[in-house]
Length: 424
Ligand SMILES: Cc1cc2nc3c(=O)[nH]c(=O)nc-3n(C[C@H](O)[C@H](O)[C@H](O)COP(=O)(O)OP(=O)(O)OC[C@H]3O[C@@H](n4cnc5c(N)ncnc54)[C@H](O)[C@@H]3O)c2cc1C
Image 1 (cartoon, rainbow, N blue to C red):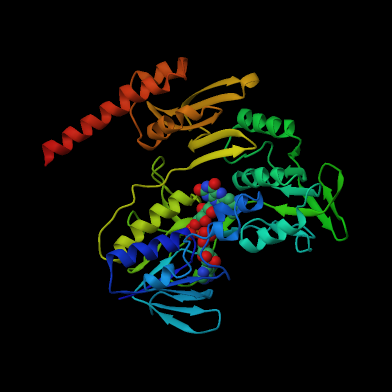
Image 2: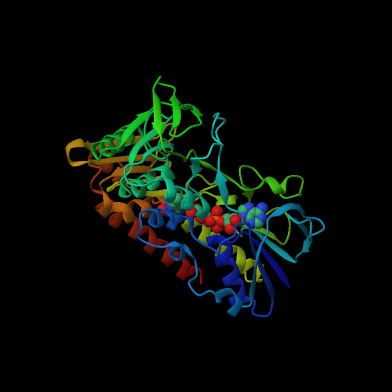
């Protein structure tokens, strides 16, 4: 059997290694489009803050790691897939046949239509190449403008602050992390970041960037800023353009079932490019975080090796450290129509808790400063735990989360275990 894995990020690497373990004699080819050893984008902030060197971002430390596992690694980009013929066309027009294929091509930064986005001194923060450019320009005291205060934007901010730059953040949403946090939480994060010396403009767009040294940036609030570096962190989209007319069904990402199979037998997808079932809503979503990529890759590879495996689903989980303020967002944090919710906020202590219920289940939440309850919140949301009378208690006293978890989740687990035992 010949297995081709497109994409040499965390999903591709985990899939290749899982396949090698469970299909020891098969041919495995791992193809990545970047001129680097397989690396982790997640490690880029640590590189920028000087905590690690470039080799610290590599997913596997030994240079001969893949060779020792008899996994061929190639640097090429797929530009077309003919699913019926089971054939890829690569960027040098060579053709590549396969028995099974894993699409693990990740995602790429979106490019908002802003004049000047192509100028030198304007960079995304997505690849090692981007990181090298940022390292050159984000020197101590440099004026840096960051577009976007989403999940990735907030992570980058920490690294930039540690480099000692003068940072301005421009976010077009009405608050920070608007796709992860409600207004109270987003507002608290903004105030926290400002208290650390960062200038933040929410509800504001970058309208144009003019060339020169320094660059001149025009904002929608009428301000003109002179900066040495612009970082664009305005969201990402799955790398699926090469699948157009391929026969593989894509929505926002490559649509997969619980085995990470696409609609075409023998073709699988995993990671940031894949759309998998959300545990809370039961609908497919792209949840572009590394733990999801790892879980999906493992399940896909097991099935590619002929060993049935099922993904229990993905959750929208984000745990964020913004200059030392820890916030979390799980599931349907915005709440659901007809649902109930409760918020508890202590601005002075930088604490906030928002719980959202559908019937007697916790379907989503936002927290700031509640690090001790992260596991409990995740367990309640992902486990779709029926809270019964505890739902009303939590609406009155939301901090009794641990008690609710112990009373309901454990009882549910025991009941499920007893059912399984009886059925065996
Ligand atoms: C700065 C930063 C910080 C982050 N921090 C976190 C964090 O704290 N927690 C977290 O969970 N996630 C974080 N992420 C997100 C995380 O990095 C991604 O979820 C993860 O990389 C997804 O893995 P993947 O293998 O699906 O995709 P990727 O890592 O994007 O890998 C995709 C691979 O596909 C290759 N490729 C693309 N197109 C083609 C093609 N046509 N042909 C061949 N190869 C192709 C690419 O070269 C790459 O090798 C962060 C990301 C960034 C940029």
